Image (cartoon, rainbow over all chains, first blue to last red; front, side, top):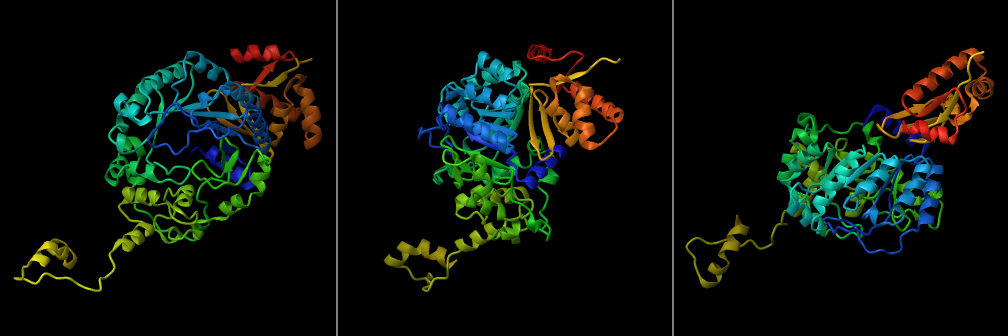
Amino acid sequence: MSSLLQEVGDRALQLSVPLSVQLDLTYRCNEQCIHCYLDHHDHGEMTTAEIKYLLQEMAEAGVFILTLSGGEIFLRKDLFDILECARSLTFVIKLKTNAVMIREAQAARLRDLDVDSVQVSIYSHRPEVHDAITKLPGSLRRSINAIRFLKSQGLKVIIANVLMTENAYDYQGVRALADELGVECTLDPTVTPMMDGDRATLALNAGESTLRSVFRDKDVVGNVEEFCALPTAPDEDSMDSLPCSAGHTGCYVSPYGEFYPCVQFPLSCGNVRQQRFIDIWRNSAQLKEVRSIRLRDLSGCSQCAHGVTCSRCPGLAFMEGNMRGPSTQDCEKSFARTGIPSVNLLAKKKDKVSPPRLVQIQIVPGVTGGRLSATGGAAAAVAS
Amino acid sequence: MSKKLYIARSRRIAARKLGEEMLIMAAHGSTLFTLNPTATILWQAADGATPLDELVERRICTEFQVEFEDAMRDAEALAEDLARHGILLLSDEPITNAGLALQETR
């Protein structure tokens, strides 16, 4: 992060200003990605008028960076109407899209609206892998074409890749594709639970050996030695540090007007259809609770060597059951980086050790018989 | 008598007031600028219709009790600097909406 942006973030924190907001315009999507955390059915999206009113409220509250995402934003027929409104309110506008509906005309309009950046999801450089993840045949070809249209208009494009079991070997290919297209590339190693709490998608997370290998790739992490450095225990000053910007200088609004600290933190703080945006930001009891949490309040993490350097996501911790607890996925990433297990991982390992049995079964040498030989393998395992 | 200088905010920027300062990002280049409280006042008053010397006299000298010559010199330097980054437009004539659109397409 540039020092000026850091300064601005600190100033916004001091003034309690929501500097950055992600607004999802729809959860509907033309792709059905296997790792997606959303329910794609429309349960009553905000209307054009409601969204414009919300944008006005956000501008008045001091929101500077507006990220429009979904679902697929281009499924909203009023997208350009919304973008024109956002432009007139002088937001920094960032878009997240799969881009399959962007052609020359759409790219030109985005340029005219001075959109700051367009993030496009690409999961592999190989159509058979990407299209199997999105479940939309031809989607890789269409997304790449769209990136070319956007680039030809001079727009800043960022390829966003999510690392998972299905594409674990393709991230370097995606980076090469990004280089060829002349765009930036990011890699997110975390598949999150569904917003309704269903954790089935977590099975798609890349395993430890993949993470270890990715975290030692200088093209991904930059300085490997620094990135994988052994952690230093938190000192007294760092005990008062904040977990992240969620709810402090940033927040998230769903297509139904629900207000959350972050897109990955489904703790409802209010609804902009019933309350003013600024009133939720200032007065929500849930947000106040999120804001009150410091490193010293985190069970396990405050005693963990990774406490300061960990990428712990409070939203993932919340979805795991405790916003003041650890996020196991981040513990696993810290372990893959450094080889040092977190306090949480050690506790989980300890919990997994079988309790002592009251009856020890041992094979008596030289004794064989129908009953004993039938269970001998298991008995031997227990005895050892 | 020297020529009047008119200033107008570019429409191709993102801007938001944060406390007493103004955050500005040029449309292309993703470069972030922050304006201090004095520069913010000038920025907000840059309507394309009021000459810079009048803005300085009315909005800066009275509010901050500074000499006109000093304030004017600083204001011109600021205006030229912001114009170089494409976030403020300068002209020796009043800047209309049409003029703004024309300059922004250059």
